[in-house]
Image (cartoon, rainbow, N blue to C red; front, side):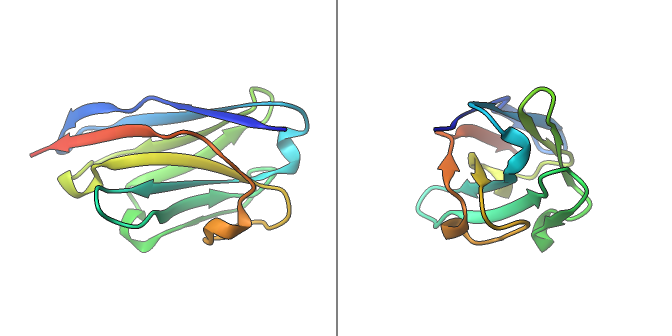
Length: 124
């Protein structure tokens, strides 16, 4: 069983940056692809970014390209999401997830483990 804990969220102003972290417990972290999703109030959860097991491949939603960067440190069992140029519309709860079977997927159903989420609020 794998447990995920996100951290790094908070209240920032438009244009600021945040780095989210997702720490995983359990074994074989490097055997999982990773992903970040977010859910705004009253909206469905949406895909943000995904990273391959070794970190050699990444894929992003169009709305974050050039602003957000996903990375991972397998020695630390951690996945990161660097967010620059934050906008008020980026306000959401951000979730990390791991997939045991599908690499670089944008679909929630391909992810096996989920964190509880961390709130990001961007004021204008």
